Image (cartoon, rainbow, N blue to C red; front, side, top):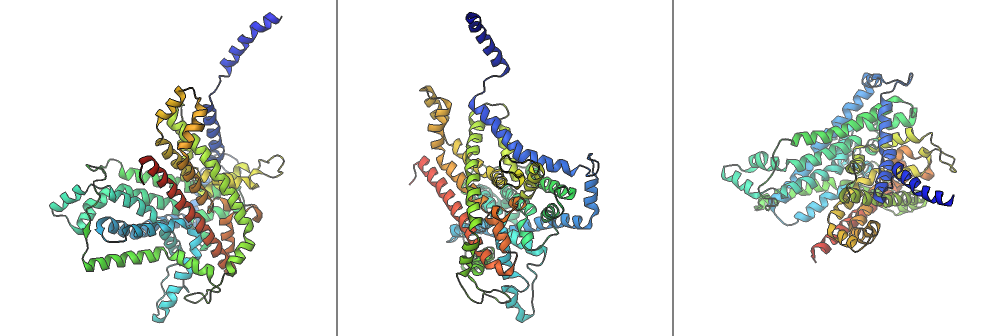
Amino acid sequence: MTHQSAGAAPARRRLTDVLFPKLSGTVLAAIFIATLLFGFLILPVAKVIYVAFVDPQTGGLTLQNFGDFFSSALFRESFFNSFYVSAMSVVLASVFALPLAYITSRFEFSGSMLIQSLGFIPLIMPPFVGAIAMQLLFGRNGTFNLLLANMGINIPFMEGLNGVILVQSVHYFPFILINLSASLRNIDRSMEESAQNLGAHGLRLFRRVVFPLAAPGYLAGASLVFIKVFDDLGTPLLLNVNNMLAPQAYLRISSIGISDPMGYVISFILVAFSVFSLWASFLLMRGKDYATTQKGGGGLSRRKLSTKENIAAYSIVVLILLLVLSPHIALALLAFGTIWSYSPLPDGYTLENFSTMFSQSGVYIKNTLVYAGLAALIDVILATAIAYIVLRTKIIGRQWLDYMATAALAVPGVVLGIGYLRTFNDLEVPLVGKPLASWWVIIMVALTIRRLPYALRACTAALQQVSISLEEAAESLGATRSSTIRRIVVPLMSGGILAGFVTSFATAAVELSATIMLVSTDQDAPLAYGIYLFMQSPSGRGAGAALGIFAVIIVAAGTLLAQYIIDRDRKKRTGER
């Protein structure tokens, strides 16, 4: 019997190996990550899209929900308003970005780097944080209009959709500035010189040669602005502009309930337009040649300005910078002010708002540190694994991990929040005694999914700089793949991993669109939701502004730290000092 058992065991093992082949650690990791992304990104979004086509009465598929949507005057108006605000925000953001990018790239004058740096500052303030502050500056009874009142002038900067356009343009214009500046720096100057030799100068040169060559950068930035504005929820809500798609989706689900089909129809439209704007920017560039004869050929030829031209250039730059930095100035005045109403400036200044903020916002700050910290940690772990699987293995379908993780960029936060409510509202968590959709962990999960693309790009860039020969050398000396990853790859990627962590943490700390849908109690609320609550009443705006300053400091510190880490890592690799 013992002999027969011993002989049968190998046969059983061979049969087991055939039925259940042994999977490597990287394959198991890929399966786990794919399952995670499917469960918390693809499935909730697919659920939202599916419900948009479901008849709530019969449960069958139908287009009637879309017919009901477009037959409603409110929804038609919301659809048009969202498109109009997004398009006009791109136009106004271009008005801010084009002069700054062109002047700093085309002309020689001191302060170009400082101007570019100041132009990036608006990105560190979430738009909803500066919305109320800008209302105090440019509203009907704001500083600017009060100063013009003596002349009988009142300009409706912040009235209705105008306010949303102004706030969003000021906040998101750096996307165009960053991409356009990079494109202008990469234009081969010989092309400009050739055009000048053929008689093209001034505006004609810019319109016919310079701008077309820089179009890829401009379109990349413009499409980002359009997507961000179209999907934004916090700014319209704080400005009390509800006749737009994102606010309507939030209001329908939060007031009527998760069974309301209109919320899902709006969510489908939000996702469709996010994808459409990316596709449109690709389509506009397809079939056109933007290549130069030599990359980085000095960029546009810089010329010196005359005294009058210098004055004009600086006047334009200072005017734009004052406007785009106005939310930060107003937020600081509001945070330190006593009463600011119907007066150009606060009546007095105090630190009481910060005292109130810390005494009433401890739970918001603590929750944010926990949520954003865990989300950033999970992000860099997943991002490192995805980057390694995509770049270092030959697993079939590995590229889809990158696609799925990056797809989070095209999913509006409000849509992800609605998807989680619909998908996980009936899934009760064992031992917790509540559905997953109302447990604080779901907020952390939403932040993880929303910020994963940021960490992924940083980790991918870091791994691309690690020579594969180092791994091959370690494995030739007997090291296992897991040991090589742990002792060779990860340490060499540490700069990119840390930069990805900081970026994910800083941006997750001020996320509102997804979290506002998932907060079930004030005790579970993060910092961004706390700012939103404070800003709902005039008496709480001072403390809300103080909390907004705290949020801006977190994002600014995270941005600077991430940039420092990236620069330090680059200098180590290149031997620079």
